[in-house]
Length: 184
Image (tube, rainbow, N blue to C red; front, side, top):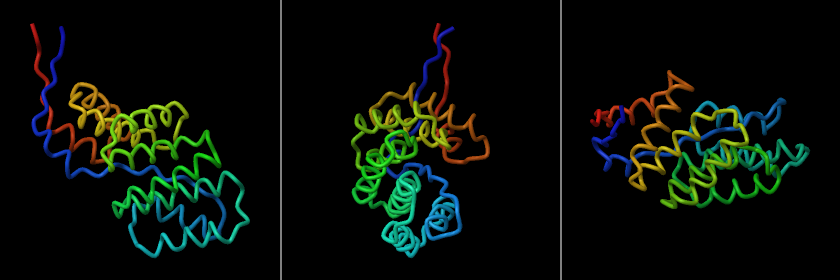
């Protein structure tokens, strides 16, 4: 039996914000505080300054520096500063080209910038690299697919995100807009 998916309200996509996948930075300094704020989902503008100070103060390993750029970019994305966030993710990718979160977030920024095909490339690559929070990659990929009118792919990505983290509301909310009908 084949399933046909129909979007109930595709126009709702215009007000959806991409998900952010923060990177864990260990230790007890400013970079760790930046990481904790980004992972907690907070959007205090002063947190961006903390991340900037961590970057400028040095003393971080290359990987932690990349993670701090990712986390600062995440905070910028929360303020819908997608181009600025995109710049931070580019730097993170140059520093740590195998960091999945950098690609997932750059893909999220590209979704915010409505550059969906480029977003899909980054999101797919980020998922292949095994990020800490793959559900956010699937969710962002669902947003990109939906914006490109590929509702079936979007539906399956939202489902995958929801199955990976059942207590996370955004994919559940998107799935409510879909109905599945059997085709003969």
